[in-house]
Amino acid sequence: MLYWLLYQKLYPFFHPFRIFRYLTFRTAFASLTALMIALFIGPYVIQKLREFQIGQFIREDGPQSHLKKSGTPTMGGVLIVIAIVLPTALWCDPSDPLVWITVASTIAFAAIGFADDYIKVVRRRSLGLTARAKLFWQGVAGTLVAVALVVSQQFGYFSTRITVPFLKTYRPDLQWHWIAREPHLGFLAFIPFVVWVILWLTLSSNAVNLTDGLDGLAIGCTIIAAGALTVLTYVTGSVVYADYLEMQRMPMVGELTVFCGSMVGASIGFLWYNAHPAEVFMGDVGSLALGGAIGTVAVIIRQELLLPFIGGIFLLEAASVILQVGSYKLRKKRIFKMAPLHHHFEQLGWDESKVIARFWIGALVFALFALTTLKLR
Image (cartoon, helix red, strand yellow):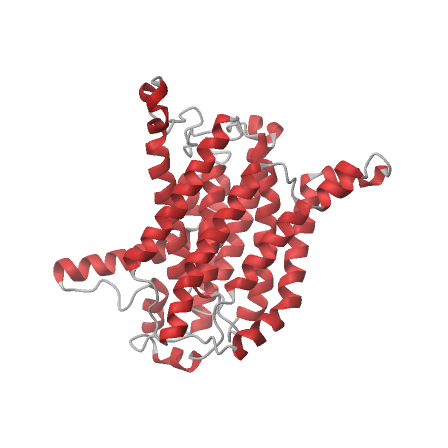
């Protein structure tokens, strides 16, 4: 709430506070605040996780080198969520509903992950919620986000038109306008949009979750993806840049840049403790929250079709699992030595640190390509 206090309330009496109106300034400070929060409270959170004996259970059919990680504190994603939400609340414009929708989505997916991790800890096993239960609650969270966006669309804060990479004039609308003309059936017009949002949020959250298998892998890729989203969000919210790049004008999404900056800072702070060899794992509470946050931001700025590039490594990890399971069920043969994909390369003999570094490089290449599409239209 520093923006509200220092700029909206105190600026008339102390003009240097006008600097707080600049989005770039507040985004930078939100990122630094998130980093400091993660670094300072990280040891306390890790210690409490140890005291409560919240340790990671390692699957026995995985790489044998991972068995030594058994007992490492997990559910460290709580630290990430705190370090994202607090700076966002401090530095954003509190009157922007899109920011609070994104924060609520992040917390909702974190809650699903928390329940999954809690079951693993209580029952002392590597499996938590069933796949059906997890998908159900992810669908519920996605539905609530979609409904909130539909409501905000009625007030002009949001658009249901999709931005299609490389096609600057083709922007299909995800609502049935022929139904919208009927007053008593108007809400049914948004069914395609609701389904669309559920699909992307579920895919995004599960993709990050599947990537979280090596020390620092998922959080490193998240830093890169969140950095790309920070740029895309700022550009989409700027009338000048949006006009220059022939993008949809969506000034209200600009405040989400503060949220994305917080996500970058929180992820860097968590990486300090999650780097190989990890002192703490994020658990599902972290991976689902980050995936939900990335998906929600992409949907709001209408760049969800760029998600396969913004989070290219996440997509490859999820695709490897889908292909592996599908191939085994249909042909009784495996495509990879082990899924997700990072375990396949471990089975090939790659050292864990080398897999992580090379996947980070791949994530950076994907993200840079996503940014180049802004001009390739």
